Length: 283
Image (tube, rainbow, N blue to C red; front, top):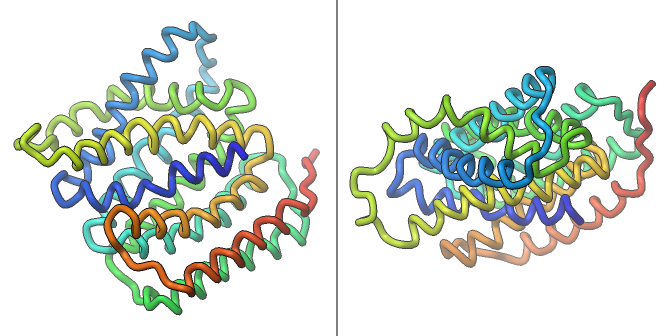
């Protein structure tokens, strides 16, 4: 449930980015949202007065930050300049499998063959759906999306493992604080000159990206990864393309059809089966 709540929060990320990127520079969207989130994160950490991470934990926080604070936000924002949000949501359908693989490499999880079979079937359903929807053609923005997938997969896996030590919300807060000195100047340089003259909806979209996609969503997501394991909980991301598409319909008036509904139900069934597949810890 924590993982699903996180995925729901992330599912609105591409539509919000697609809307904002018309008015805002993609680097500002990617790094500016992290700057805003980092300020809030620093206040939360100060109020909680928790333990300061160790040097080894700070190193892993740096990897997490490169993946989910810098890599994914900036690359996905670049991609949204050239591809529709629904197209981006489908490409990110590969993220669950990538995250599961990263989780196995980084952690001690050893999923069963049944897990991998259901995970591959789920990803295959998303790819087939993409082909049927006519988004199988390769776009320049897909290069950025594939980079975003790789960055997020590693960031999720390291952050999920670290959440068992620090707690889910502390991981993303510390990752944001660690990255703050490096992202502040680039974000300021790319800030829009129009400022408050931009439409209100643009800034509301930006605030959603900062406070939900970059911060609050990770509270749930990291907690889910820590409780259920990176490989297993990562498969709830198979639902994210369909959450993204529904959000695209509601927010930016993209089209929802019967095929989308059918494939969404098939993916839900796949995720349900996947949850029952055994995963053991390696020695």
